Amino acid sequence: MVDLLAENLNKIKIYESLGREECVVSSTALIRNVLLTLKANGYVTEIEEVKEGKFKVIKVMLANKINSIGVVRPRHAVNVNDYQKYEKRYIPSKDFGLLIISTPQGIMSNRDAKIKKIGGRLIAYVY
Image 1 (tube, helix red, strand yellow):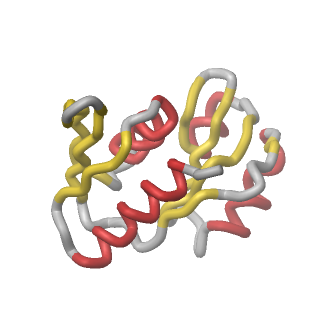
Image 2 (spheres, rainbow, N blue to C red; image 1 turned 90 degrees about the vertical axis):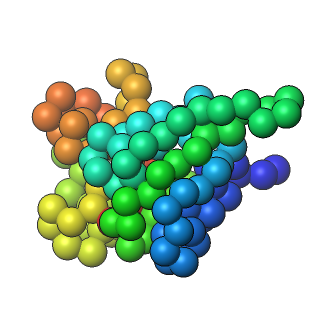
Image 3 (cartoon, helix red, strand yellow; image 1 turned 30 degrees about the horizontal axis):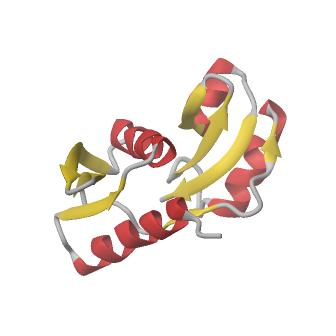
């Protein structure tokens, strides 16, 4: 099986390290929602879904603020009290980076999930 999210986040990481301004990734609902979360937190500047041939792709305008980005495997179930434990594991320091979490109210950052006091499953991290 292929993990499209992992492949596309790795592509973004490579393009960021090369200093590129734009990256084209696959378009799925999960990838789109993760990118919207990254945009809301300032890690990418703009996303645009376009059609290339038969398939839809997403053009991502990079902000060159990503040091590392990756997928969390296995996707741990997290409740409100466990966020700090996983922040220590995946993020290098406090208030530097974020976890991306799939919750019953949609995909959001760990900061938003703490404010709303809801748990979910870890999907990715970025700093």
